Image (cartoon, rainbow, N blue to C red; front, top):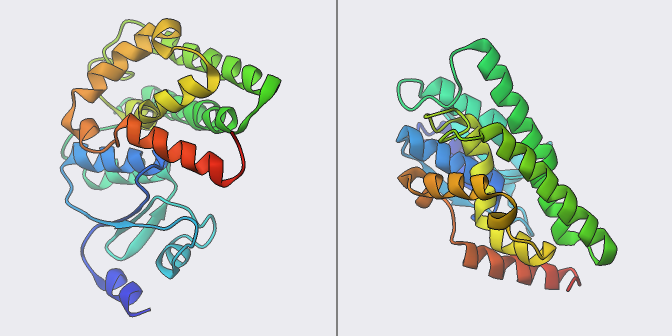
Amino acid sequence: MLRIKKIMASEETVLLDFWASPFAMRVRVALAEKGVEYVCQPQNLVNKGSLLLEMNPIHKKVPVLIHNGKPICESLVILEYIDDVWAESSPLLPIDPYQRSQARFWADFIDKKIFVGAKELRMAEGQEKENKAKDFLENLKILQGVIGNEKFFGGDTFGYVDVALVPITSWYNVLETCGNFSIEVNCPKIMAWTGRCKERHSVSSSLPHPNKVYSFALEAKKAIGLK
């Protein structure tokens, strides 16, 4: 309780984090883009601590950004908060209202179709796995059509949609193994985009190595009795 009160009274920016969470990765990338210094508080998601439960009593999940003693939950909400508070550098959302609406639309699509689809693929078995793999690739191809020949989803600017999607790149090895497909073969423009993103320090310094994620995913599946 004393630690919680200390954090709430502090002027430090604190991130309640879990290294393999793609949602937490988003926040790390955004903070790095903005050059924001923060304190990382890794969380145990099996035995959730009192700090996480008090800061996010509704969903009880990471990430949670604590700024000026106030918690902000849900990764896309946090991205917009970061963009508003540290607006002077590296804007994530475009200024134009229509373009902002489109960025939010595609970020929501990524949450509901890519991230959810990735989890469903990892948990599926047998014929269901084949179906989930097909669905995942179809949705990734939709995003490939969105980026087209642009450098990033925001054109020449690395922005909100890029930050929303880029954590999935750390899970490529896991997803390709589960789905028995090649993202490079099926979505070459997404792979080219991935390469450009990883050239950015904000991305390379914030995302775990795919091999580490792969090992984590194997252990997680074994823990729940999946092959």
